[in-house]
Image (cartoon, rainbow, N blue to C red):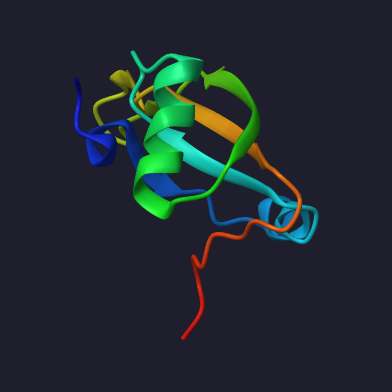
Length: 96
């Protein structure tokens, strides 16, 4: 079995993700090969909460170019997981 911390890479920090936290929905960057059951098991193992639903999306990396050389490149592709928790469960992500 994979280590749960290798599956969940980082929380997504944005206005939209903060608004969803109030509804019990958390957004994470995950490993590109992670499946929905693996993501669900990893969140449950790390924080000890009950996961109701997992949605995933693959984001294409933006195309970049060098100023002087004119060479094209790209930023890496990422995968995100939108995790819905059962009522009454919370993940203490950004508390001091």
